[in-house]
Image (cartoon, rainbow over all chains, first blue to last red; front, side):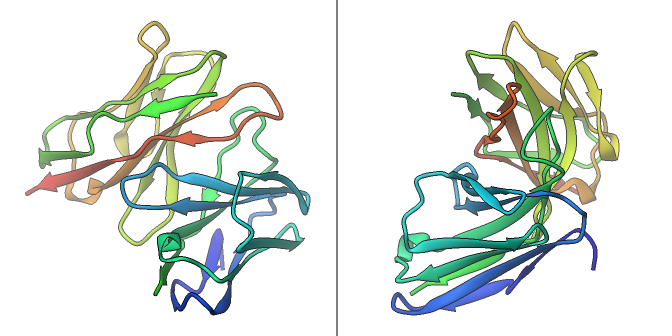
Length: 115
Length: 115
Protein backbone atom coordinates (compact mmCIF):
# COMPACT_ATOMS: atom_id res chain seq x y z
CA UNK A 1 0.00 0.00 0.00
CA UNK A 2 1.20 3.48 -0.77
CA UNK A 3 0.04 6.93 0.20
CA UNK A 4 -2.88 7.36 2.56
CA UNK A 5 -5.49 4.63 2.93
CA UNK A 6 -8.85 4.79 4.64
CA UNK A 7 -11.26 2.07 5.71
CA UNK A 8 -14.08 1.50 5.33
CA UNK A 9 -14.80 3.38 2.12
CA UNK A 10 -18.53 3.41 2.83
CA UNK A 11 -20.40 3.20 6.12
CA UNK A 12 -24.07 3.28 7.01
CA UNK A 13 -24.93 3.55 10.67
CA UNK A 14 -27.87 4.25 12.89
CA UNK A 15 -27.88 7.07 15.38
CA UNK A 16 -27.33 4.69 18.29
CA UNK A 17 -24.43 2.78 16.75
CA UNK A 18 -20.75 3.03 17.54
CA UNK A 19 -18.29 2.72 14.69
CA UNK A 20 -14.71 3.69 13.90
CA UNK A 21 -12.99 5.06 10.84
CA UNK A 22 -9.39 4.10 10.22
CA UNK A 23 -6.66 5.96 8.40
CA UNK A 24 -3.13 4.77 7.68
CA UNK A 25 -0.34 6.68 5.99
CA UNK A 26 2.67 5.00 4.39
CA UNK A 27 4.61 8.20 3.71
CA UNK A 28 6.64 8.55 6.89
CA UNK A 29 4.80 11.73 7.83
CA UNK A 30 4.44 13.09 11.34
CA UNK A 31 1.21 15.05 11.12
CA UNK A 32 -2.26 13.68 10.45
CA UNK A 33 -5.60 15.38 9.97
CA UNK A 34 -9.33 14.62 9.87
CA UNK A 35 -11.54 16.69 7.59
CA UNK A 36 -15.29 16.66 6.98
CA UNK A 37 -16.48 17.27 3.42
CA UNK A 38 -20.17 18.11 3.02
CA UNK A 39 -21.90 19.06 -0.20
CA UNK A 40 -21.74 22.75 -1.09
CA UNK A 41 -19.53 23.54 1.91
CA UNK A 42 -15.78 24.04 2.23
CA UNK A 43 -13.73 21.26 3.73
CA UNK A 44 -13.88 21.54 7.48
CA UNK A 45 -10.79 20.72 9.50
CA UNK A 46 -11.78 18.63 12.50
CA UNK A 47 -8.61 17.46 14.23
CA UNK A 48 -4.85 17.72 13.84
CA UNK A 49 -2.25 15.42 15.33
CA UNK A 50 1.45 16.21 15.30
CA UNK A 51 3.83 13.49 16.48
CA UNK A 52 0.81 11.64 17.98
CA UNK A 53 -0.25 14.66 20.03
CA UNK A 54 -3.52 16.41 19.31
CA UNK A 55 -2.71 20.00 18.41
CA UNK A 56 -6.08 21.15 17.16
CA UNK A 57 -9.71 20.41 17.86
CA UNK A 58 -11.80 22.65 15.70
CA UNK A 59 -14.82 22.79 18.03
CA UNK A 60 -15.90 19.30 17.02
CA UNK A 61 -18.81 17.74 18.97
CA UNK A 62 -17.80 15.10 21.49
CA UNK A 63 -19.67 12.40 19.54
CA UNK A 64 -16.51 12.40 17.36
CA UNK A 65 -13.50 11.05 19.23
CA UNK A 66 -10.10 10.86 17.53
CA UNK A 67 -7.26 8.55 18.43
CA UNK A 68 -3.69 8.55 17.16
CA UNK A 69 -1.73 5.59 18.57
CA UNK A 70 1.32 6.31 16.40
CA UNK A 71 2.38 8.61 13.59
CA UNK A 72 1.11 6.20 10.93
CA UNK A 73 -2.41 5.53 12.19
CA UNK A 74 -5.37 7.73 12.94
CA UNK A 75 -8.84 6.70 14.03
CA UNK A 76 -12.12 8.54 14.32
CA UNK A 77 -14.50 6.91 16.76
CA UNK A 78 -18.16 7.70 16.17
CA UNK A 79 -21.08 7.37 18.58
CA UNK A 80 -24.64 8.65 18.76
CA UNK A 81 -24.26 10.55 15.50
CA UNK A 82 -26.92 12.74 13.91
CA UNK A 83 -28.17 12.63 10.31
CA UNK A 84 -26.40 15.96 9.65
CA UNK A 85 -23.11 14.17 10.31
CA UNK A 86 -23.53 12.32 7.02
CA UNK A 87 -20.59 13.39 4.86
CA UNK A 88 -17.30 12.32 3.34
CA UNK A 89 -14.62 12.08 6.00
CA UNK A 90 -11.13 12.63 4.69
CA UNK A 91 -7.86 11.83 6.35
CA UNK A 92 -4.66 13.61 5.36
CA UNK A 93 -1.03 13.60 6.38
CA UNK A 94 1.96 15.91 5.98
CA UNK A 95 5.63 15.88 6.83
CA UNK A 96 5.11 18.24 9.75
CA UNK A 97 2.11 20.16 10.96
CA UNK A 98 1.76 22.89 8.38
CA UNK A 99 5.06 24.74 8.27
CA UNK A 100 6.34 26.55 5.17
CA UNK A 101 3.45 25.50 3.00
CA UNK A 102 3.68 21.76 3.52
CA UNK A 103 1.63 19.68 1.12
CA UNK A 104 -1.08 17.57 2.64
CA UNK A 105 -1.69 14.12 1.16
CA UNK A 106 -5.26 12.91 1.30
CA UNK A 107 -6.84 9.51 1.49
CA UNK A 108 -9.88 8.59 -0.63
CA UNK A 109 -12.28 9.18 2.24
CA UNK A 110 -15.05 7.31 4.02
CA UNK A 111 -18.56 8.08 2.81
CA UNK A 112 -20.71 8.06 5.96
CA UNK A 113 -24.48 7.91 6.01
CA UNK A 114 -26.28 8.27 9.33
CA UNK A 115 -29.85 7.05 9.38
CA UNK B 1 -8.38 34.58 9.80
CA UNK B 2 -8.54 33.83 6.11
CA UNK B 3 -11.34 33.10 3.69
CA UNK B 4 -11.45 31.78 0.14
CA UNK B 5 -14.06 32.49 -2.52
CA UNK B 6 -14.50 30.37 -5.59
CA UNK B 7 -17.10 32.26 -7.55
CA UNK B 8 -18.00 29.50 -9.98
CA UNK B 9 -19.49 26.34 -8.53
CA UNK B 10 -19.65 24.66 -11.95
CA UNK B 11 -17.71 25.30 -15.15
CA UNK B 12 -18.51 23.37 -18.36
CA UNK B 13 -15.81 23.53 -21.05
CA UNK B 14 -15.43 21.88 -24.42
CA UNK B 15 -12.54 19.49 -24.83
CA UNK B 16 -9.33 21.18 -26.03
CA UNK B 17 -10.66 24.62 -25.07
CA UNK B 18 -8.88 26.78 -22.46
CA UNK B 19 -10.22 27.14 -18.95
CA UNK B 20 -9.78 29.51 -16.02
CA UNK B 21 -11.05 28.69 -12.55
CA UNK B 22 -11.26 31.71 -10.31
CA UNK B 23 -10.11 31.99 -6.72
CA UNK B 24 -10.05 35.07 -4.52
CA UNK B 25 -8.89 35.14 -0.94
CA UNK B 26 -9.07 37.43 2.04
CA UNK B 27 -6.36 37.64 4.68
CA UNK B 28 -4.79 40.23 6.96
CA UNK B 29 -1.42 38.45 6.86
CA UNK B 30 0.86 36.88 4.27
CA UNK B 31 -0.44 33.64 2.83
CA UNK B 32 0.53 30.53 0.98
CA UNK B 33 -1.88 29.47 -1.77
CA UNK B 34 -2.81 26.04 -3.06
CA UNK B 35 -4.93 24.35 -5.68
CA UNK B 36 -6.08 20.80 -5.02
CA UNK B 37 -8.01 18.53 -7.38
CA UNK B 38 -10.47 15.81 -6.42
CA UNK B 39 -11.25 13.20 -9.04
CA UNK B 40 -14.47 11.18 -8.63
CA UNK B 41 -14.36 8.81 -5.65
CA UNK B 42 -10.89 9.95 -4.67
CA UNK B 43 -9.27 12.19 -2.10
CA UNK B 44 -7.69 15.55 -2.83
CA UNK B 45 -4.39 15.79 -4.69
CA UNK B 46 -2.13 18.83 -4.86
CA UNK B 47 -2.04 20.49 -8.29
CA UNK B 48 0.27 23.37 -7.41
CA UNK B 49 1.14 25.83 -4.68
CA UNK B 50 2.55 29.30 -4.31
CA UNK B 51 4.95 29.89 -1.45
CA UNK B 52 7.17 32.73 -2.68
CA UNK B 53 9.12 33.92 -5.71
CA UNK B 54 7.67 33.93 -9.21
CA UNK B 55 3.98 34.72 -9.20
CA UNK B 56 3.35 32.26 -12.04
CA UNK B 57 3.30 28.74 -10.69
CA UNK B 58 3.27 25.64 -12.85
CA UNK B 59 1.75 22.41 -11.59
CA UNK B 60 0.94 18.94 -12.70
CA UNK B 61 -1.17 17.97 -15.72
CA UNK B 62 -0.44 21.23 -17.55
CA UNK B 63 -2.12 23.53 -15.05
CA UNK B 64 -0.72 26.86 -13.92
CA UNK B 65 -1.85 29.62 -11.60
CA UNK B 66 -0.90 33.23 -11.11
CA UNK B 67 -0.70 34.94 -7.74
CA UNK B 68 -1.94 38.51 -7.89
CA UNK B 69 -1.41 40.18 -4.53
CA UNK B 70 -3.11 43.45 -5.42
CA UNK B 71 -6.26 41.65 -6.52
CA UNK B 72 -5.92 38.93 -3.87
CA UNK B 73 -6.45 36.31 -6.53
CA UNK B 74 -4.93 32.98 -7.48
CA UNK B 75 -6.71 31.87 -10.63
CA UNK B 76 -6.03 28.45 -12.14
CA UNK B 77 -5.62 28.05 -15.88
CA UNK B 78 -5.05 25.40 -18.50
CA UNK B 79 -4.67 26.20 -22.21
CA UNK B 80 -6.31 23.01 -23.48
CA UNK B 81 -8.40 20.68 -21.35
CA UNK B 82 -8.95 16.94 -21.69
CA UNK B 83 -11.76 14.66 -20.66
CA UNK B 84 -9.53 13.42 -17.85
CA UNK B 85 -9.58 16.91 -16.27
CA UNK B 86 -13.18 16.38 -15.21
CA UNK B 87 -12.99 16.81 -11.43
CA UNK B 88 -13.64 19.21 -8.59
CA UNK B 89 -11.00 21.85 -7.95
CA UNK B 90 -10.38 23.45 -4.58
CA UNK B 91 -8.45 26.61 -3.83
CA UNK B 92 -6.93 26.86 -0.35
CA UNK B 93 -4.94 29.34 1.67
CA UNK B 94 -2.81 29.15 4.78
CA UNK B 95 -1.10 31.64 7.04
CA UNK B 96 2.69 31.76 6.62
CA UNK B 97 3.30 32.07 10.35
CA UNK B 98 4.58 28.81 11.79
CA UNK B 99 2.09 27.34 14.19
CA UNK B 100 -0.88 28.88 12.42
CA UNK B 101 -0.83 27.16 9.05
CA UNK B 102 -4.33 25.68 9.01
CA UNK B 103 -5.59 25.26 5.45
CA UNK B 104 -8.76 27.17 4.63
CA UNK B 105 -10.56 25.82 1.59
CA UNK B 106 -13.02 27.30 -0.85
CA UNK B 107 -16.28 25.55 -1.72
CA UNK B 108 -14.85 24.08 -4.90
CA UNK B 109 -15.47 24.37 -8.63
CA UNK B 110 -16.74 21.38 -10.55
CA UNK B 111 -15.09 21.29 -13.98
CA UNK B 112 -16.98 19.31 -16.59
CA UNK B 113 -15.34 18.65 -19.95
CA UNK B 114 -17.72 18.33 -22.87
CA UNK B 115 -16.52 16.02 -25.67
